Image (cartoon, rainbow, N blue to C red; front, side):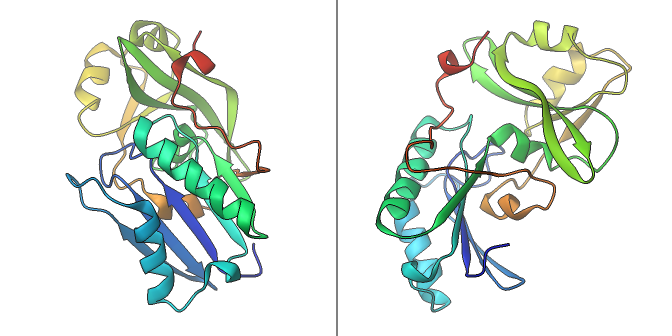
Length: 218
């Protein structure tokens, strides 16, 4: 855990709850803020107001957390660029994860394979496969962007597919009876503080948003 306050930022909006969200951790307390659904939102203003409300200067931050996508093209670009800016001008560490892992935290702890899904458009779906070891979610294989028929054909008995609201019916209608579907809600920057996530340290030149399917599509 960081010695100073930590700020989590997200622009991926995987469950449609907020175009941008921020969460400030001071000690054991979390303080969250989000832009309203349907509004364009301003992540820099959201973060600045959150810090000011709790009397924290940007220079006091010890850590930044961010999810890298897949998700909203514009939201991810803004969030990652903003984190890069803060990282460049301040001595702050940055830890990140992909949004599929973030989505997987919505499912209850179990020994089942978790298969988070996000609509990638153009008849492709972003898909991850995670397992939980010692309370931490880890990717069992690299995330891909694949046709839904291919994803579902790879389902094993006991898999749990984790999907955003509005996608569950489509997935459930095509799934074999042996798999389950869990609907995720409320995935925002606050979720980045989940103890189940395995966040990796990222240097200034390592932060890259995963909004381009060609970067990992099969």
